[in-house]
Length: 485
Image 1: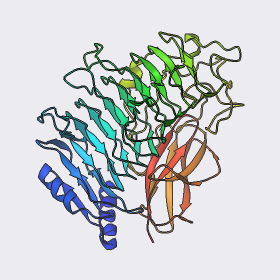
Image 2: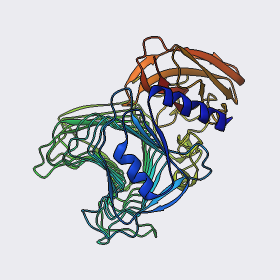
Image 3: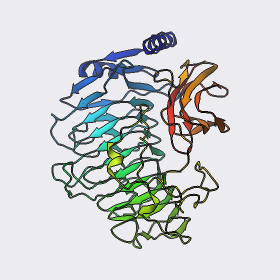
């Protein structure tokens, strides 16, 4: 089935004038990158690729016709890009993406002399990749990079030899606005899980959805390093004046050495919705010096922080949280407080986050239905508190024709979406462009357990690449849509 569909896609793209290239060596990859054009696909065969030098991606795709760098559909294991033979140096960023409109998926980047991936381009999608043991941040955005989406990626065990630097992810310094992190995990990075420190940019906005930051500030061997050790560093700047607006939805900060959600002189607007903070040095820290412009916290929980939380800002809107309205959040509210679940549970086949019991509310917890509607999906009379909504609804283990949610794909008029539900669910269906902007939203459907299907018509969608998102209260599954005339 997979090979038949691959042959169909190759023939279809050839008719459209797009090329598909398969690479199995670094030199083949360099050659393919140097000639890539909008709509082209570069497939990477499985195996270890040992790089002795960094490389750049600088040929642009266009809106509607991204250039794709993907694992070959026949692969059993993931391609590993190994840069560990490169010397540690700020000039040794492993991969530099200065181009626009790329889709990079399914690659493991290891051992870079600086960043594993540095993005200065815009409107790119980085999906289901990992960045580990790099000598600076695993993935960093700068030089005006804007409107990029990082989806279902991991960054871990990044540290420099001076034992004081290297974040998991960093949208910082002179980055642009509109960047998003969705479904990403950052753990055991020497410095921060996410770093938003600014120098050269101001008043930008970054969004974090369903992201987990845990045990940052620790080295790979488990000892504490010399870095800051925050989960989410919202901002900060040399002059203490710059604004990095940040929006957090359904995020976890757990077991980080210093702060879970960190102010660090950020003068911007920070919004925290349905988030969970547990066992950080301080779970939520917004100080009264160099004060933030505004701070909104709703439907969130904070448990077992090493110091008392602080919620200072010029304007605050802090309501319906686990420490308000007579609520007391304690260990009895949760099925598990084992942070190791966040790291050891494997991602699902589509790259989405694993199902874990960590900070899942127990039956009877008074944190259930204790929230307020903030525009996120919920089950019951009102939203629950924390990152995970309770209930029996779920799209766990969606089964679809091989690894494809819809067929045919590409399609010109309509495509069939086929899946199998383990249990009855209320399902929402949405279509996003690859920059994370919702294009279409359909009415929720009550579906029975077992095989289900529906027809998705192209309607107003212009030719291009999109994400089809099936979502309920416990998770989501994503698939790429390609529409053509």
